Image (cartoon, rainbow, N blue to C red; front, side, top):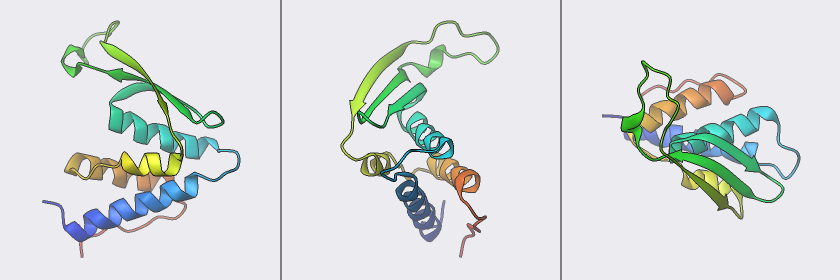
Length: 124
């Protein structure tokens, strides 16, 4: 079981990273990669594109994971194309954060990859 203080610290650090990555100016590639990674994780999507000017997200969501076989080339996966409109990307991405154990491990790896300085995430 994950310590609740560690869980809250990971979530708050990731929310802070999201806030820093959503300026009103031009979005850098590193910031866009963070946004895409969060959306891919939350929606189980394999193709995500974000139109920051029109405030629109287009993604292809995998409907059935059981059709995926890592041992062969998958030429067909049942997907659903979705267009999502957002008012504020910062609040939209914060609502996509989940607090299960697998998601917290993924968020900790995102923090290591996208944070400017290395941060220690230890159970206290």
